[in-house]
Length: 112
Length: 112
Image (tube, rainbow over all chains, first blue to last red):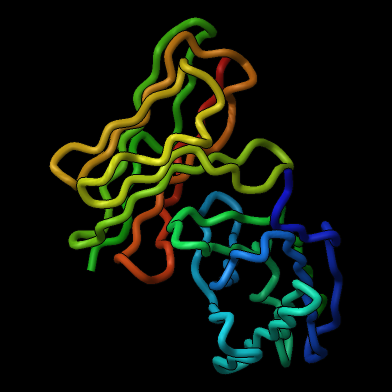
């Protein structure tokens, strides 16, 4: 039962353009969402999060949008840089539980 | 400050042998998680510790897997009678009571 889904396994974007990574969830109890970036042979690193009381959170080049009615969130990276090339994981938790459920990841390639 | 430390970074073992993986969380973090990432897969939740509460073991794939957290700090994940399907990167993460997870670089386990 995949409660957090990232339906695009990969994405290629030109340097300087916008990267949009998508995530869907099924559990309506989720109330806190996170994005992580992972380079090969390293652990995931935290990027940005959003609480369900908001619909947008911005941090520098990274913005996360949350659409609760659609159970959908997205990560926007503007402008994209070659160093952004990595696997991006969407994650969620809620319902009073601290267990964090991760998606399967999207591999982003930013082409110079 | 020091991040989450995992050891060993790589472990090769023969099928049927037991292995122990260690995690040193960030000092002061009350929550500790174990995940694993099999080749080409997402992050699979294994177990979660929070303070002195009973751990959430709902993700452990079989009774060959167990984990302890001693003194609310260091954790050990033990896999008994390893099988080839146990080959994966085992990731440990810690977090404060409410906040993002901070991951270690993982232990790459190969069962031959």
